[in-house]
Length: 292
Image (cartoon, rainbow, N blue to C red; front, side, top):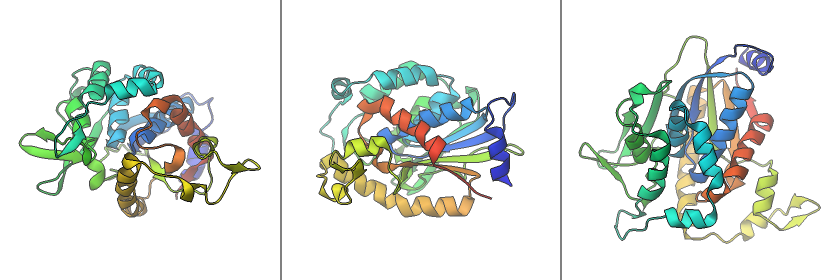
């Protein structure tokens, strides 16, 4: 039923599209793919009426809800590898070796000091209270603080301390917060997972593994890849979320699931903004899964 409805709304000639409750997963730099998918949803006349996100998903969701997606996209596409190095503020803290203040201040310049309850559409982000081992849900208060708390990847970014709570990445407990998003009557629950394990590879994935044969990836290319420290750490973190993500999707059964391969880039490839956004557009057109 929903698949038929969605296919009808994909007709660009419609003046008023189907309402969408949009949930964006964690994923580090892969989260830039969320931008391409949002652009495709809007291009196809979907009406995004609420957003929810974890980690990088909370940042893209917040930027969109604040009406600053264009400005953020321009900035994301302009960041070079050298710019990225300048934005990394290392610290000797035992709780994480990157403060994250420099890059987050760039985001703050774009979105401003806006409160969640003042956003154009309902927004929710989730972080993890590491001491009390529970979710912390942001539906009001400072948008920037919600983003900062939600994206604090353990051991990499220093935790955010709010109201006496030590908060880390929301993906630890809820990498795909479908249960938290605000719904409206007859809307579609659209979920974007940028951590998908996909056999079908995109051109961007192929570019990440240069050894090819007749235009195809050699089967053992990934096995030969040497992972750096960041890759090993974040890959371990990603793998722990896989089963949890699968269970969440199975339980809440979104109307539309858009999968993006976790192999499109490293978690820290923020200098590849344009390519990652394009991978999101590609995922929308090739990897939409409709559920009944």
